[in-house]
Length: 391
Ligand code: GDP
Ligand code: CO
Image 1 (cartoon, rainbow, N blue to C red):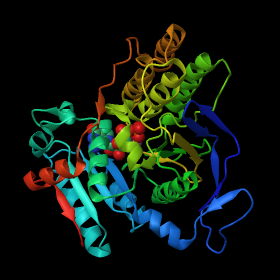
Image 2 (cartoon, rainbow, N blue to C red; image 1 turned 180 degrees about the vertical axis):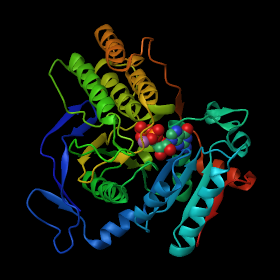
Image 3 (cartoon, rainbow, N blue to C red; image 1 turned 90 degrees about the vertical axis):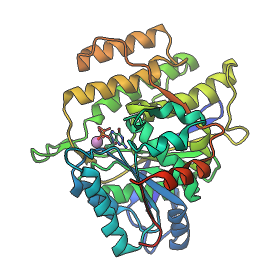
């Protein structure tokens, strides 16, 4: 893959957020270098792939979609499936396990499958700061909660980088492209604390009736706009640099993943940016919190991919809840002054018929958590997890 090297960036305190970098070529076979583009040769690409664990959150998705996504991720990358799928009355989880077993048998890929509602978590996490993830039956439902487990497993595996790819993707080619964008983008950033976030690229043509172009296009437009306005009101210089507030498809260094705080449910993607801006911009400029990522600072790369993002449609209510949870990450942060709070409420009313204050996201810190201890304990206790070393 060749990425256009972004020329523009905005600096917010210790954060460098780069303008969108396009995928210039999906496959740079035969050419690595050009002016103002960045690509990796095969050896370096392989090195990045093997150091990147890909986390796939799944909750009762069509199994053929999950299988397509798994087939798309380069085999050098270990995969971590974090499932919250039902086990009763239909045991969807069992079918997911079968798919991973078959895949690993054929490919010998390193794969770990864990279930979020596994009571083994209760013991594995008790006494740690992550106890807050728990209810009486394992880790609470929520995409963000599942992603935190994915980060712990990735760290336990010894991965240097962790990437996330949703399991409800209809186009394996796009999942493949995300993985390449992660390896290439993280190499381009080349720093201890960096993150690559995907900007979806699609033209608005209606696909067949059983699939639909990702509606997060709409939620994303709102969240991006609110976040840019919140930054603008602090900085007093207008910006529209944030293009990936809701990007479920993103990757980062493990060092960054272990340093930031994580939000639960669908607030997670927006909150990553909110947390960084709060602790590494506002606190530095206006003195409240300290930025754990100093002296290196944080680099945020935004990559616009070529394949369309087509995922499963889950209805208007689902979209409204997501918009509220996502905007809630901004609403309760120190980025939101009263104008921004009013804007969030009117955005929710006008676009989603959502009349309440957005929900306050649960926030989790990984500080002091030892992933190797937690995950080895979990795997020892669990009768649901699957750890495939050689296939
Ligand atoms: P959207 O794509 O942002 O509209 O949100 P989705 O509802 O499609 O969720 C994104 C991904 O997270 C999909 O792969 C879901 O199957 C998965 N997911 C949703 N909720 C949960 C959860 O509670 N736990 C886990 N582990 N995954 C979830
Ligand atoms: Co989806």
